[in-house]
Amino acid sequence: MRVATPWIYSPKFDLAAIIGPPVVVTAVVLAMGNQLNALPTIPTWLWVVLVLGIDVSHVYSSLFRTYFDPEEFQKRRTLYLVVPAVCWLGGIVLYATLGATFFWSTVAYLAIYHFVRQQYGFLMLYRRGEPTGTWQYRLDQVAIYAATLYPLLYWHTYGRDFQWFDNFEVVRIPSVWPELIGRVIYVAVLVGFLLKELFQWRSTGKLNLGKVLLLYATAAAWGTGILLFNGDLTFTLINIVSHGVPYMALVWIYQYRKKGRPAHEGNRFLRFFQAKYIPLYLLALFALAFFEEGLWDKAVWKSQVSLFGPGTLSLAPLALMVLVPLLTMPQLTHYVLDAYIWRVNKQGATEVREVIG
Image (cartoon, rainbow, N blue to C red):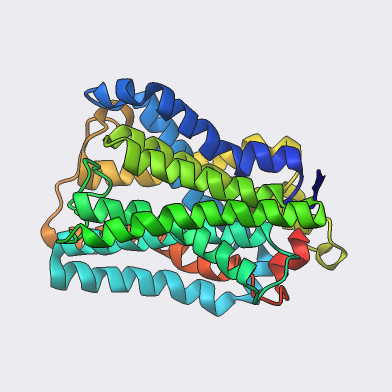
């Protein structure tokens, strides 16, 4: 076998930090899913690891790719200044005119879109160097969308017991026929993708191992979290780990590789991206996450008294109308900017390819 994978960094790094997390968390859920869902509440230590250490932290990790990088910030200064303001003001309008339930439903669907697009982006990174505009390229696109969209279709058809966002319920599809048709397409596409890769391997002697593993790791994680198990904790565990850990790793390794490019030698900020500073990177993300979630808990949720202390704020509806969109603004900004900073076009003429290779 000749492996021709354009690894994002290296086989060891990618398997440990990009592809490994969804595989490991899926294996944990498959082995212990029933016991996890039987827990009456999520233990505080696990909530800290998942919510503070991964979920909220991964949102703030994009700061190290955008606002904290002076070279990058100057390049897209207007974009980086306008997007947070629009997200905050738009959130206020949405919350004030259509209410909290519609506001959180909108945020949830933006999150779903973001999660789907992240997996698509990773697949495109792994297939860089392969021809575009061919039926093989189209099948790769269809396959990653099938791996993510079919479980969502199932969720919207039958409903699940996930408490993902406050006051959020998916829009129910009144007929089972879309799901049944989607199931056939889902299986056919995943099988067709595998047959296509095996045929190419046999014909050329090359196997894009990273792309294949990424696709099936995604399918396994989303299928296990949504289709096989119907519990809040199993869904949350897979959802957060398989999405957040690879993202934080991608930000770090992108800036690390950017540091080694001659065009960026004058960017002193990139000196931070050395192996010895990884604990500081994670600690900074955790501190930002702790601060944000502390505000959420004091002003809105009031559910983690043992962690953030007993004192709470009693805010008027008008104040919440301003504060809730403000606290959601980092998350929404992350969703919007993510579409710009990792974009890889068909020709590959982007700074992402220039850095990653």
